[in-house]
Length: 587
Image 1 (cartoon, rainbow, N blue to C red):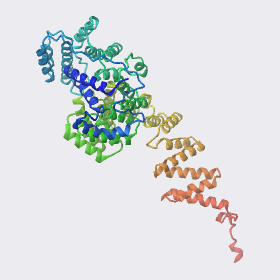
Image 2 (cartoon, one colour; image 1 turned 90 degrees about the vertical axis):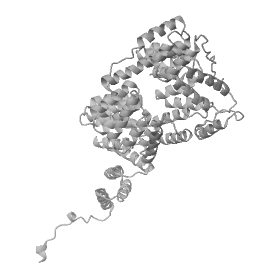
Image 3 (cartoon, rainbow, N blue to C red; image 1 turned 45 degrees about the vertical axis):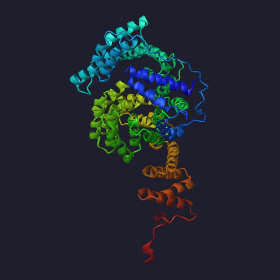
Image 4 (cartoon, rainbow, N blue to C red; image 1 turned 90 degrees about the horizontal axis):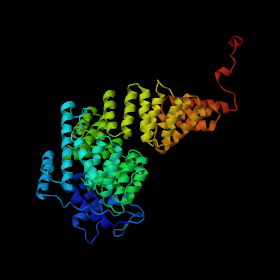
């Protein structure tokens, strides 16, 4: 049982402690959640009231029937109480620490580490180690650019890792390491590929100090399967629910993720983070209308937000909303154009306009700002596919899966690229990886079915199985039913073809669509029903075909004439049925 006031007090203390250790990303996250807790009306300040009023429309949209009143503690879940981390009183010289922190804030990492070289307190030891780690990362990026260019591959490593690992391992054995030291030790172990030990160390970190969201994020990255996630020995602190919501989302367990976030809104009713995560889950479920509404409301409340807006641009791109995407790109450009997210949004805008070369320029710019920015690699691969540059697309997609092997979009892109290069067996391999990661996406099944249909394979039975899976996954592109009908027709299975053509007509009628697929389905069904003496049904389909202009109209007339002659009680007036006249006898 935990109250809103308890969460508020914990977060206030955590924000100060995280900022004091230069963990600014975690501090910002904690501050956003703090302001997201509904304030007691008697204590609310005008600015706080304005913030929460702006978030109220999002809260109403996603409120649950069991939403909790402000003063009521959360019940139904037994949370553990983690003692608030007490500051280290053994810092020998606070003035020196403040100097080191100032150097750190100016990104003079080695200078900050040098200033703390004689300090032995845990707080000072962490900041010195963290500064050395970031100094090594900075030098690694510089060497990569010098050797391979900003987007090149390189075997350059952070040269501080070995020393830091030895020091932190020693501190852990001596019991002189704190939760922040565990966090840094976990990062270093992860970078060296020692994932099992990294998970153990990060679990120790979050169990001892659960308010460091950066530690939870690193731990999430190492939870590559549901089994690994379930085996973690985590204390049941309320921060664990945020972690599980994010981890479920990464593991494509979207319904479980949505359930966690909707539950958390009982306390964090005005947090913008939670609706953004809900939007991510719904984006994966392809519920674009809901996602668009959420992001519009988030931007009304936080108009200068850049985080997650690249996903909003993906939605606008998928819906082909030219004006809305143009407005978003212009807004982001004026706000902060040198952010990876901003460059991706502008890249999407140019891609939607068909300017693929210009789009690639912006995706490359995003990667120069952050070479591990997953979306940019994937989207750049898509642009190369549009430009028919398969080798460049393969390279971009491979860089994406190196960063995140669970990115189904990159595996799907690799399949497309190899299909373009007429290498269907390679393409199938990558399509199978993508549908394994995202089995409810009809587009992936359709892509795999197209591959089975390719001239080099002609594995039509396997293609039919894929199209059936696509039809059961809410095929928004309306491809699966039509292809199922055509394949069964090609294989001489007229009954099955008729079944799928009827299903396709029903879907088109429900969606109020017309076009060549409708004409093809009506023509097949008219002929099929005529062949099997279902004249009434055939007449219905023929009458519908009379509304179209083209050869199908004449075919329908011919079928109707043929049925009229068969049903007439009088002999046919076809000239072939009359005997020739003997003109000679009449003369």
